[in-house]
Image (cartoon, rainbow, N blue to C red):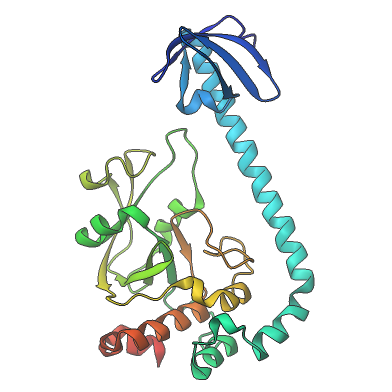
Length: 288
């Protein structure tokens, strides 16, 4: 597709003309300046072609480019995971025996319970999840739900949105805001199909319809920071689609299934800072 000489519209600069495309960038001459944009990425957000037929083709090209990039990133993650697993047997032993100084505030009892895995995975048990809510936390907490769109505004689906369909009544969710666990909740019922709640307009750029899950939140006044437990997180983040990567930092996305050994650690540490949590029935049952 030859776009040289085609007119484009920019919300910031007005109408311009494409003068060149080279090495993943295109140069556009506007009335008052010359600007460079990433090609074809810019057609998704920043500029649009005046020719509607060409713009339609560019939408498809830009979407395909994003999908290719996502696939490449997934392959890179898989390769990194493979390399990590080759050395995991050697890496596990020192982590179990000698936790780093950074996590030294964790009691011996807590560390032992997390590393021995007293909460073992059982498909028949209720599951635990980790939700990166960020700016949507306050409104979702007030409404007693979590919500995610079907797909992005470019028609792409993401596993961390689709995962809302997996939630069952009784599952536990850890709600995180900027690394701190601000609340825990129990899922009340399976997801339903729902339009985006009005209070979330502007927070999700995807479809206007999606999955809504109602849950009973318990706010945590003295939240723990997940980043204080990086070494434990590394040990229990060796599966695809974990909320944290093998380096112990959070993955991009919304909802992930959380290893129950990490859930136990996070819950025990939260109870230490907020003893009132220990009186909640589902917390006592989980930690029993």
